[in-house]
Image (cartoon, rainbow, N blue to C red; front, side, top):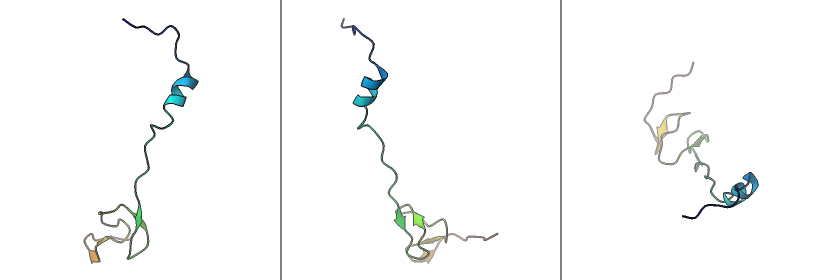
Length: 60
């Protein structure tokens, strides 16, 4: 059974993992209000989706 001769240092381990990062979410702008929103989701700021109001937003 193969066993490592030396402990892998944190620097060596982290250099190997440099390309294993996750990307941030894709964000598009709402055509109604211009706020950032996730694609294929209703806008949380104005409540619109594809030009229609689908969520009633109560301003406090």
